[in-house]
Length: 59
Image (tube, rainbow, N blue to C red; front, top):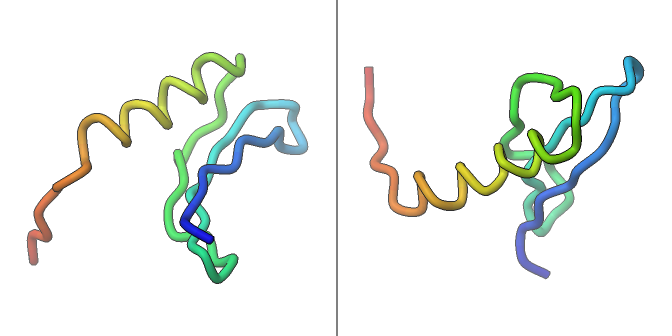
């Protein structure tokens, strides 16, 4: 099984997303709650579009 994005609502009723690895561990999240589902989906699409080959930068 490949990694997948999970879309869910939190205790406040806000939409959130997380990226889950094939072993079931969450490896990334949106970091914020969205008031509507479309906003959360846009966050997912932004990660897919803008970071497919993002470099690792050590600080």
